[in-house]
Amino acid sequence: MSVFPQLRMRCLRRTEALRRLVRETALLVDDLVQPLFVVPGKHIRQEIPSMPGICHLSVDYLVREVQEIAALGIPGILLFGLPTSKDESGSEAYSAAGTVQQAVAAIKAAIPDLIVITDVCLCQYTSHGHCGILDDSGCVDNDRTVELIARTALSHTQAGADIVAPSDMMDGRVAAIRRSLDRSDFQNRLIMAYAAKYCSAFYGPFREAAESAPKSGNRSQYQMDPANIREALREVELDIEEGADIVMVKPALSYLDVIRKVRETYDHPLAAYSVSGEYSMLKAAARAGWIDEKRAATEVLLSIKRAGADFIITYYAKEAAQWLRQLP
Ligand code: PBG
Image 1 (tube, helix red, strand yellow):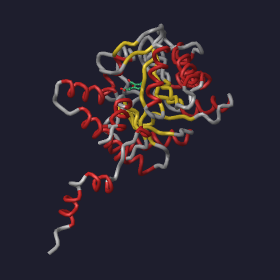
Image 2 (cartoon, protein in one colour):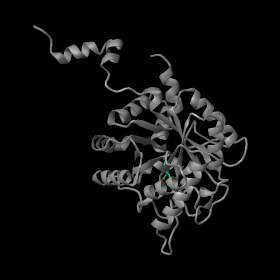
Image 3 (cartoon, protein in one colour):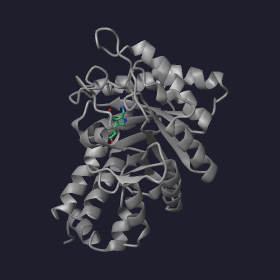
Image 4 (cartoon, protein in one colour):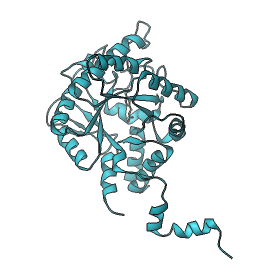
């Protein structure tokens, strides 16, 4: 009598070549985007304590880092900036001479083919650390913020950004950005919307890196409740209607069901952002010798692909690209 099909499958999985033949999901260097932090100044390369291996880089060192990233075959980067000074309305965010604007121009001059995505938000630039400007009652003023977000996106685009990625979660910002880019003849530049962005504890290390923690209150006024998935679909739908070219779910690992649901509901390109806390947890466990870092990180990234993301924004991009280039 023949063995059960399931047992036959198990035998098959013992052989690496057969395992490769029947594998359902592949993680490729093509799927990775590396986030980077640019700071004002020169010759600065300073590791962020809560994110081992990730550095604050001044533009000169940033360009070198991006050259290495591009040489590994990684298709794109996501750029965050820190200002020289902060104020109530985050004015350095939309200054043509801002750090991000300078960085984009320098990267585009050195490596024109690499996709440069910029994060568009005010929280690194405002003195109070919220993602927008505040009204008299201390609440974020949605409509006035949207104007500044659109100005920021336009300034990044003028500097050469291929894709702008609004992460502020204000209502109507995607439409406002689209209008402002189109008016300035940037019809062919893309918008990647942080569409379903949850109010997450996993942003902790990033807020240290970007010095962007709110001085008071939290972001639950404009970020989503981790308990909700139907709301995520509505957010995604609105951003698509407003003209988003790529939609994003963030964080990734605790929201694999959301990624899958968005994948099944919409045909738009879908990004997943594996955020700072997801990275730092793996790094910490690996440093303590509690997990095999390469296997664990690859498993996490693969799970995000399997859930349905087209690509993954991950602080592991560079390392993962190095791992993926080694033969098994
Ligand atoms: C800014 C922004 C945040 C992240 C990306 N853009 C932080 C936040 O909302 O507080 C988080 C990224 C990460 O944790 O890696 N609005």
